[in-house]
Length: 392
Image 1 (cartoon, rainbow, N blue to C red):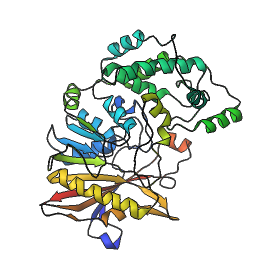
Image 2: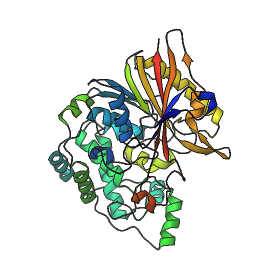
Image 3: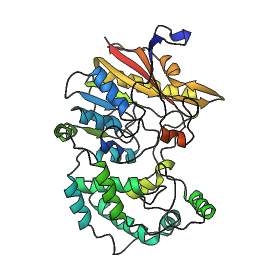
Image 4: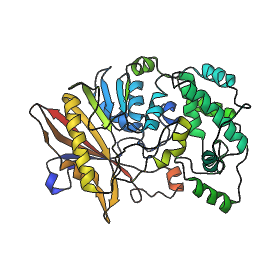
């Protein structure tokens, strides 16, 4: 439904409101669901905007806050090349590991060839303290041996990358399909919290064969045929790891479309939520990610991002910034309202202007209601999308 923007200050900005894409789960290609990631949007969101704003193939699509790679994977599925940027190297791996996806029989043969059931294991005291609340000792030994193969490959083997990615998605969760005892599936809770869970539930980690679980997950995710053009498009991708206010190696006026979702203040701690994945991938957790509770500081950061997006976008091209409503300072704030105050961004060569706001109102499915997420009442229930356009 089209209407005027509800805030008087921005009444000239048109707004479209409604259920713009399906609320049903797992409706897009299976490779989107290989791994979960906190606060990621559904693939239907970039699909909607790519189809809305691009009428040619081989366009260049950028996500400066790439997360698990939803935007670039959907771009590649639609025949476009893409740039994935994220300061968190875990996010970089989640995206890069799906750049080249071998056939399932190749993945199965590679998995069968890995000797992870026996052999030496190196684990220090701190690692044991952190990991044994989650895993049976033999399961943990298998994870460590698989990890050794992945790290020794230096992420250059596409089959090992995809197997490692699938292993990341199975590390911890709430069913027998995961490697761990009953835990939280989407984020890595801290070891002490898992110890408390074990005591409360009177549980100890059972042995779980990790090869069986990796293969089952890969078979599920690779049921859909990968389009022929996917890999040819993905070969042209770039994967970078820098501050979104200074996007290295992206030339001026080269990007056809941006679809992204920046961090919402400090509502998600991407470092602590992914501590076990960081360990598995051999990464240091000390990254300078933007996480602040201060709205003014967040807006200063976003102003810098907007300036950089204005630089890299082609004239006439658009940027879609997906935000939500968050609780901050004792009230609910619709973040696109504050972002609108940053516009226009004016330079000697261009202006970045607000074009419209699209608000997708989520009608939750039965599964979501089972988790007591009420329609448009609790949590971030809307995708609030600010569309900007670069003009001369």
